Image (cartoon, rainbow over all chains, first blue to last red; front, side, top):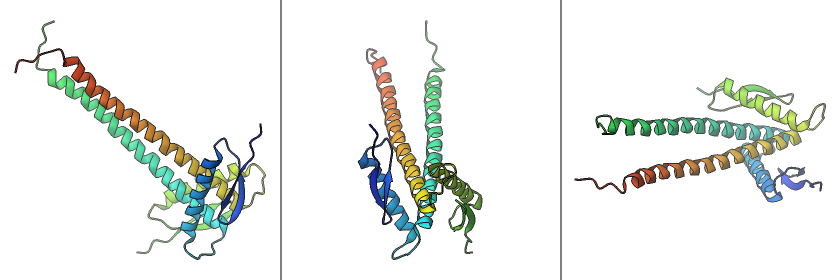
Length: 100
Length: 100
């Protein structure tokens, strides 16, 4: 079965978007992009669609990059905490001589 | 000091992008958007900039959404592991009666 594209309206123009995702999810993404374009265009602006879409894409790419960076730092922090837990257990028992 | 916009070229057109970020970072984002637009447009395509930028923005938004979902699931997995560690420590010692 060939999946038909999902019809969406972004910045006042109709687009057909194909993808493996559900129609509902594709519409959510389209709405998100529409909102971002209207944000960069500003109220009552007549900014052309290409400029609005490019600036919106740059802003979304910025958010994606920021999130990747944040998660990398968080990952490192969690990794260090797991190391600290292991060290703590070893340190707590290092002055106890277990009779084996 | 008012920061001047960073001049970038995306999909063959010049844009001035303002932001708190460095010129270098803004250029990286612009290059990323440029590549994504050319990907959706396909080789030798004459897809108009608005359509290419909107489809690129939808794809980047999809990646952002997917990453947020992945990290949320990973966060939950790590949280459960920390609970498991606490439970394991408690369980290991539950049959030992410490003389206090």
